[in-house]
Image (tube, rainbow, N blue to C red; front, side, top):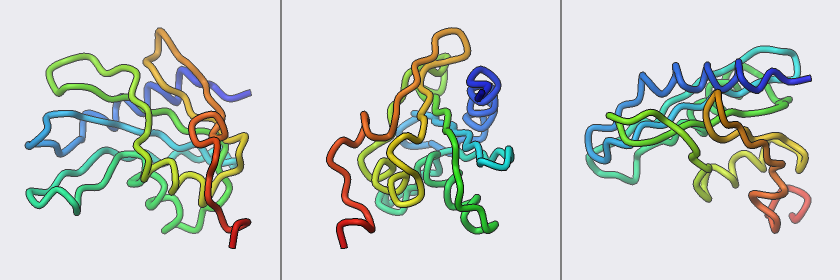
Length: 134
């Protein structure tokens, strides 16, 4: 059984490392592999905006670059820099990247350590486009 609260706490810690001088919207993510390892990520903005990278993709890219390919769950937390983080769903690009590496039953945990909601990837991206479509 996945310890969602612990995973969310790690996402909150990752959020503290956010580089978001333009939007001041800080996001943290914690990605749990099936082997039990956790990769964290934060959003990293850029003055040109399009090179900005979301927390979810940062965590996934870190894991994949280390050879990980089997993922179980991801916790995401976000909000304005001067506020407590909370419910923050992944953007469309991140949902697509998650679908590249995860099955439809992959769990995405949103909220904070006190109020968690767990969704399946299939709920957040019901009509996904994947390698199975090629």
